[in-house]
Image: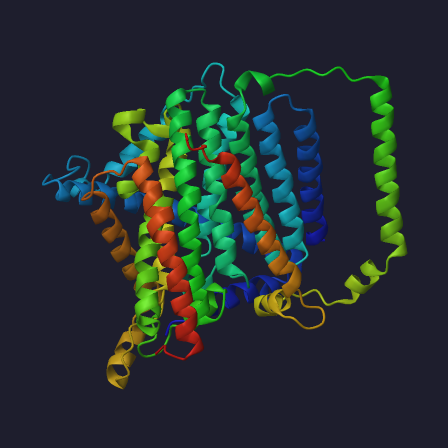
Length: 173
Length: 361
């Protein structure tokens, strides 16, 4: 019962903030509502006893990505993003609806056809210890993920170098 | 050693067995009570810290500090709080009202959230997750957003400049703060707060002694970075009065400002508390391997040790704050990115080598 109550609260927060994030006119408010959506998702992870994933969600998304968005918003001109009004055409509404239906159908089929939920429901509801996660992330055996981990670090390095290349001032020759 | 879990177990049994409540109501009542206790402790510690800051500051500047309200001025802070509570709250024209209203709460969430992780005594942890330390750094990063949205929402150019500075500073110093905590995690082998303290009980087991050179460097860097993270001391660029009026909370009055004030002091306490928990053993008493001395030290309850260590560190940080002049923003960032962070990366390797070759005590 407690889980259900918490889930309902989180669901209301997530859905309400998501809708507000889309319909608000001020871009920095949209970023703030996005932050609440991400908090809500982190809350669901905690509800599922996925504390590591919840902590990573708060740390990476709430602490990192949202701050990055807000900094990026600072870099654009104030007038170009404040109080923009867009006329919504009928054809775009229909295409949007169709796209979301396709998305819903995909998610639904994946959820029904896949045995993931049944498998997950059989696992006992306990917190996964931290050292197990660490071993899985950095081990090279079966069901261990050192290759993606290292690949992501190379990818991040490439991003950093690219960022420096874009940001640095050209030397005057 | 006084174990606080006796009290919590007794209370749990009282609710669930003696009163016969179902588990839902038991947990609900316990959660509400703990929430109230945390907030009360938060407010009380904040009052103590503000009074301490005023007196310490006064003595460093050869003054006597507040003396009028009550003997030795001890009721001064209560008068301040009363004043702040009854002050009129006004909003700013053309500001973003929603963000202006939300921002103090984000700062408070970050502050109360990290505060709840402090280990007060054996068996007296409020939040004790498996990922403890990681979650502390995650929650503390919410504060950046609160500061930034306050500056943006105030519609004031000084506030925006100050918010920019504070956000940049907090994001930068989080890096070396995290690296210091990783060093501690490597040495103790766990991320859980209670586990970190358990690893430091016993003769000569405090982390600064157990991990000798790397742990001592990490401890000092942690204090420096923590001071910057809390926007205090020589790093209070976010609220440099002479340049930016009052910083990102210029446009806040009454309790809106009060929340920032509370959060600033509690962040100081949280940083000191984390440093004392992670590096100085938290509630672990000083043991030297001589049975008589150890038994004597073990009689002293854990929370006395914890508060003693924490307030010693708070005092050191205040000493630093009222001694050094403020840095310039580029010097501040240079200190972090060119000195502290590379140093911490080297220390991280050094710690790993020490642990791998068994060179710890």
